Amino acid sequence: MSILKCPVCNQLLFRINNAYKCSMNHSYDIAKKNYVNLTLANQGHHLNEGDSKDMIIARKRFLESEKYGCLKNNLISIISKLSNHNSIFTDIACGNGYYTNSIHQSINKDNDFYTLGIDISKHAIIQSSSSRNLLSLSNIDYVIGNMDYLPIMSDSVDILLNCFAPINEKEFYRVLKSNGYFIRVLPGVYHLYELKDFLYENVHLNIPKEENINGFNKIDEINLEDMIELNNEQINDLFTMTPYYYKTSKEAYNRLKSLNYLKTRISFTIRIYQKI
Image 1 (cartoon, one colour):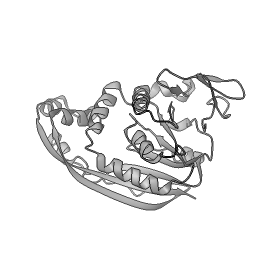
Image 2: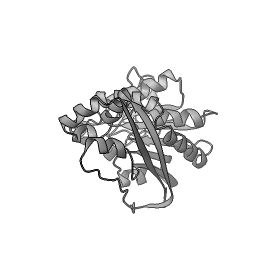
Image 3: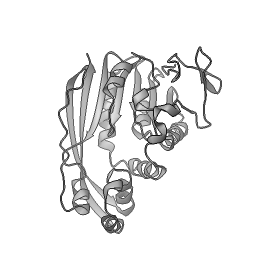
Image 4: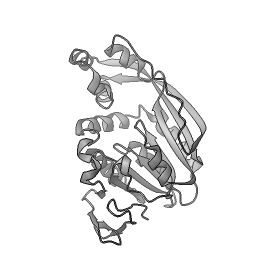
């Protein structure tokens, strides 16, 4: 199955041997890890290359510890209920593929659930593809792509997921089918409160803004909260995979590196929208 479109001429891409090609004969090679790069130089990819290799490695280690398992399990449950026979699921800004692969593995029992993961970070897509390959998952593809120029055919996606990332409502609206679902995950009010309290003098709560997204109706909102206990490696991996990595003073970071135990809240807001 292909819902990918050529970034040059917008025609449908077909997989032919080790490349994707369109009717205009534009061709995109498939890498050894079985992913394809569908970004163009004039689409600003060189200005935003996504998460670094260090962030991706830290995120992989941390998420595989299942500290965010409550979020993963809730997403699997939600998407299972929204999907039906031959559903097409896309994870935009999929990162290292932890949620993408887990959702696909849980739902694709009869090989009739197609999944597409997209991220602008080459490091993320290499990791997500490698994890998929180790799990021997079928009917799931990974693409390096820009959220502002999604290489996806219009009106082709049933369910779209976006976790902890900016959105492009016009592009999301374009690629979703009529009555398709958009699931957005945001940090909840007290997410990582104790971690931030250790790092900063003044802790700012995450107040998810109420959003009116053009072309969508919000049909549900789910708030999750839990406490997690972290050892030194997990503390540092969690810190490295978050935006705090870029925003924290060297002094605070050095204090954190020597911390051997932390108990902190995790908090998530899951919003479910339906295309009008």
